[in-house]
Image (cartoon, rainbow, N blue to C red; front, top):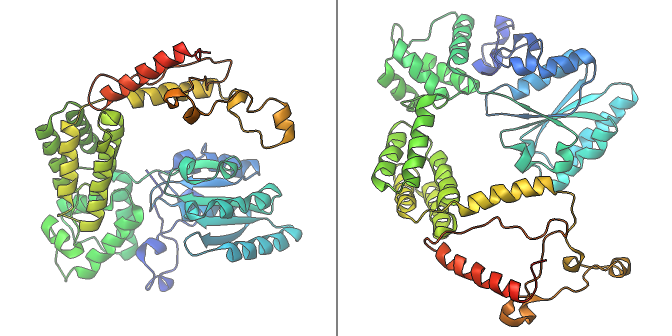
Length: 438
């Protein structure tokens, strides 16, 4: 669930403002559905009650109340509120905001700086926040729809707490529409099936649900009530046959993945088409096909990943429905390709080893020695340049000395990995002959 907007403003100021804006909560108490954040025991409520608000990253899908909650936080804590968007702002804008915050800080008032789409700032721009966060000039609240672990600098993440916003579920959206009807003082001109269809169209986005409701009210003539087909005609959008947040979505994508893994192109194509017909986002299916290529085919057929990325690009270029054929082609390619999870298994094993041995330094002979001090410490001593060795292979040990050699990747005798297996066996033989076991 996610936040539900509550009407509070005088009627005279509402006529020209979008419905979603008119229904914004006026206090954190009005925000329902985000109990893990704004409830009595929620993370934000505990911060406010403690009198100590730290920098945060709000991560969640569109229309879940990230901007609204940031504004309400400033109101409940007495902080000055500043808002910028990473899409429209640059270094000059940041400097101006920081300077105003410093001036404000000198008079005893701290600034809550809300940065929408913060992941769109580049590394240098993200780094510019660090000094003003550290000295207390600003409390940063960044909003992003992307995974912060991949899109934000580690230095920024280490100074901010990530809070996850959840999509609206069906009950939440129904309550939101009911509040909209109260504010408009009239019911939505939809029958029950059409109402359920509109909720599915919103796909967990509260703002989208209210925008769709407004479109319906504008289109309806006096006394008119829309059924599902009438709704689709009015808003020019089709609702998914299943709820993407419920079992139908996950059951079908699971069936598709397992059919591909099981090398059954007919079943895989059937489930792909089921999801197309249900109104699933084709680019979501493209991303899942890429995942299957790297998890279940891997280096048994290195072209699988290339084919899937090309299919995604083809869909971007052609659009729907023509581009769906490219995704269907990629799906059949994956189902008929030789299968291997050797790289996937190796990655998980190597990650476990990295977490367990993250403090170990690489052996000195493979480290560069750009300074005299490092040369004196033995950095680079004994390194053998593989291209100058017989067979372009030195057989040196590259693992940290305390670990010794490890084996993570074990390619099977299938597809292209059969050739990789032969190479690895050959290099292993040379390594033993040349004493590189370590």
